[in-house]
Length: 133
Image 1: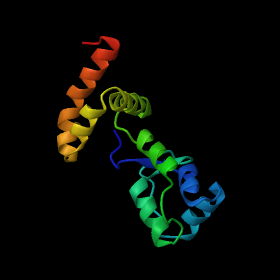
Image 2 (image 1 turned 90 degrees about the horizontal axis):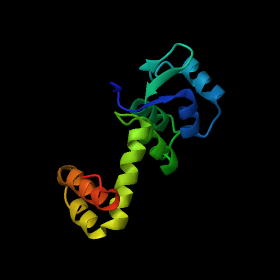
Image 3 (image 1 turned 30 degrees about the horizontal axis):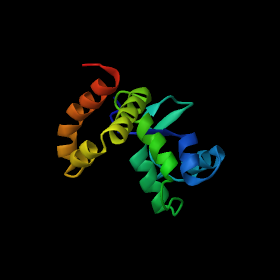
């Protein structure tokens, strides 16, 4: 699991800002306050996404993260990896499709309530669809 939450490479930073990777390299060299790497390798460092977003906003280089990029960041930053994140997302979509009232009830309250109710709701829909129980 990553210590700094979701990490992003220079290519990811470039996508966020709508620039090429060379611009990111220039920013790293020219701006002493550019976020420090938190992982990766010397030739392909990774940076804490939250730090990079804050820096880009402060520089006027980022107004809002595009939704498509945000989805990939969340998938890549999942503690169990992107495959597990995709499996979980697929299971939730199945729940929404097959049991919309169960989903509406589970998601109507707080995030904590959803986290408590979601495992049983997913078990129920997966068992009904695939006989996993």
